[in-house]
Length: 137
Image (cartoon, rainbow, N blue to C red):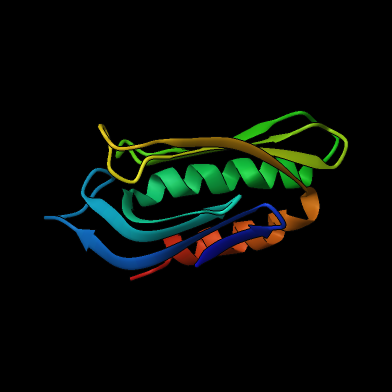
């Protein structure tokens, strides 16, 4: 499970099931997640699908931010499946800017967009949570 919990923002991604179709491969391996989100009195719960490769890419980008705290780099969590987008930018000074977009019922449902901040001390927990989801079976 991945959880980011800040005073004004909380997101939790919990794996529900993993589906590997046919002989597998990058486009035949999906992780079905329960997404829980809270901010400023708003709460959303929905399900979202992501490929392990998409999570691995996000994890590698986050590791780069963590290992290079003085560089200005970004990490993006997005999938070919719509519904959730998150970008974490490092300002090179130990702070993170988290930009997010949630749309529980794409493409026509309401969409919530926002920005929040954190320090880099959250990165090891986020990286560990992503790794746990990637290894879910």
